[in-house]
Image (spheres, rainbow, N blue to C red):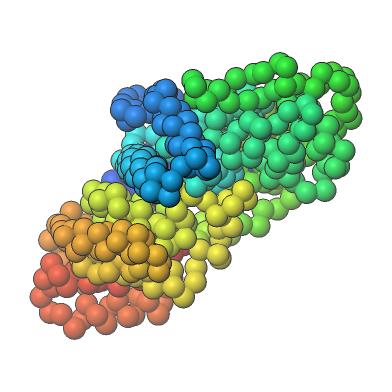
Length: 505
């Protein structure tokens, strides 16, 4: 179990698989370069990403801003003033109209910042120098699923993504504490409101059930005691930062997962990580994300053992996984349904095109079922088969037309007037997109031989051979055109992207 893949089996197919799973898909030249490395060096080129420079300038608004808290305070004060019995109806209406105007201005600003944050993240996924770090950030975003709808702060969401990047392959207890005391999480699971008089159990419960152990591996008593231990973890709205408030903390004796004492929140997290089930749980989730949907329990246990033996550090676990024979098994390669994000980012890379306008990208992902920064609930996205429905398959086909040919329709965002306006603006932007440059995809020799052309498209977009029926359909299409124009080739690429094969990675 977890034997390293022999050098004799390291080839273009294995390199393409590593690119697809540890990143978002490699171009033929990237795959060739990776295949020329040794297996160890190839895996290290992804896992040791901190050695690669990645100088990214944060957005101008990504900093504590006392004015944000002041604006919220003013709005709350105005709402209270509206209820004053001494006001006339005209005064009350004037005050209410002013408050709504200020609230709408604030919301528009936050929406603009969220749009910028999504766009910047998608660019890093598509073109950044550290593909595994961004893939891990996407994994942790789904694992510690936090929604901007409740957090209502692009700055806090930016901070959380930066926390995921910083700890993505690091030490599990430190990572857990960083997430637990992250402002977005403090708001999302109501930990900021927890007091010794009334401990809030939301974070303690989800931490055990969804983040670290799984159902059936803790008791209700563990949850209530853990919630007591975590009191005092709070948020200073003025500084927009975590703040420990000792006068909110329950100093009494607690017992969590068999550990007894005057436990703090950190003590609870360490008790959780010390439980062998914690390693099994997180190793299983990582394998399902990077490997295959239904892992062999023995394989998960082997990965969990690596994790524990290496002191609960994620990098050795990832290295062992990406080097293992099991990771490159035929049952694992091309066994995953692409998430909307994997589909979009991979398509951009294979098509050698830049990111669509932020609003277009956002509408695509939302309509395909993965609205980044807005997961559906605390469990995140279900993934797997849930990505594929009649509507989303049609959406992928339509969006392939937009990406390849610069034509098509994004569809509607819903019945609400504001959402319809957004969808209309996004559709207008999509209609202005240019078609791809075909010469960046196929060369002149490929055009002259239909079978060679299909092989070139398979190598670029699938890294494997098309299934027989889609291949015949593609060949029939090409045979109907004696001299292939650029537009004929674009149609052929779109036809390939509509196949069931292309939905897998």
